[in-house]
Structure formats: C-alpha cells, structure tokens
Length: 119
Image 1 (cartoon, rainbow, N blue to C red):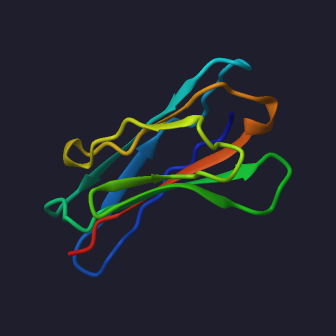
Image 2 (image 1 turned 45 degrees about the vertical axis):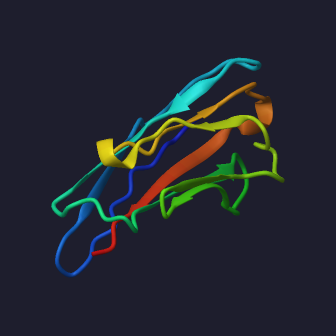
C-alpha cells in the first residue's frame, strides 16, 4: 500500500486541510489503518462528508470504496474491499480513518481521503 495523498478542499470563505500518511505498508493477511485527520477553520457541519478512493497500482481509474455522509458510514459492499473494511473515524474528533482487514496483493495502490465540510 503506497502513496496516500493529502487533499485540501477550499471554499470561498474557509478551507479544510486533510492529513494522511504518505505511505503505509502491510503484509498479506494482516490489516492496516489508513489514517485521515483534518482541520477546518469552521465548525464541523452536520453535512460533513468523507470519501475514500482507491486507485490500483498501474490503473488510471479511481473508485470510491467508502463514503460517510449525514452521520452514516457507507462501506463498499460489492467491490474487492467487501467485508474487509471498517470505519474507525469520528468526524467530531476530525478523524476520517478506515481499517482494511485481510490484506491482499491487489490492495497495492493509492488511497485518497477527501473531506468536505459545507457551511
């Protein structure tokens, strides 16, 4: 698992800064925590959303594997991460982290955490 990319989602009146680890390593069959913390100059909105994307190594396509919105986590239930992902984040604590269990060679790639905090 390599290349976690931090993102920032600016708006006209405020910004949110997202922090992740640059690289995370794991062994096949084990688990890893993909950390995603954020800071906003504004109060954390009830409409905050957190989305994790995955781009497999060698692929140009990125897929959404997790989404948090309206206080509910929505975990990919059809793709390669089905039944292997766990939401461990807490937006009130500015945490959007996930855990991937039972790692496989096909999990190698780039994971991106995107946080939006609308006014």
